[in-house]
Length: 172
Figure 1: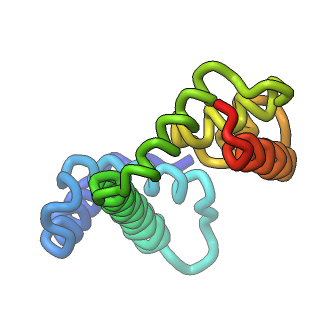
Figure 2: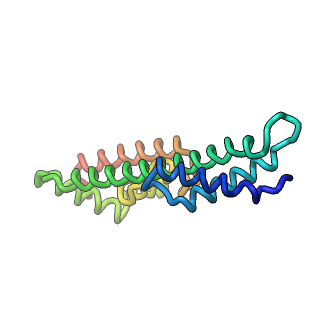
């Protein structure tokens, strides 16, 4: 492996150039660190005799590593924004005024989820609790219950049908 110490100023310059283009997304030090990792990867793959220097070969990987880092940060930022938007929508939906009948129905459903539904299997009840009380996704419920997502969907559908029947019959 070739020594990379003489190429660190090139990585530093690349980090400064990148930082000026992506101001506010990440620190120059983080970009420099990612660039050094990219340079190390390039140095392990570099072979002499192909007509280019390690600096030329490594510069591509340095810039690529920095770009990958910025993309990862941008994706996280978008995901956080999506989560915040979904949370705001959920709160706005919950805050909408409901009729007295729908309020009573929600109280009955909450009571059933808390106390249990006569005749409902434990897995079905737990599926409803995790989905509607805890707000977990189908995949997360499947992970928690150690079943597939398809099984969670089937359990949820069966449990909701039982709940609808109980509520329509006036039980609680």
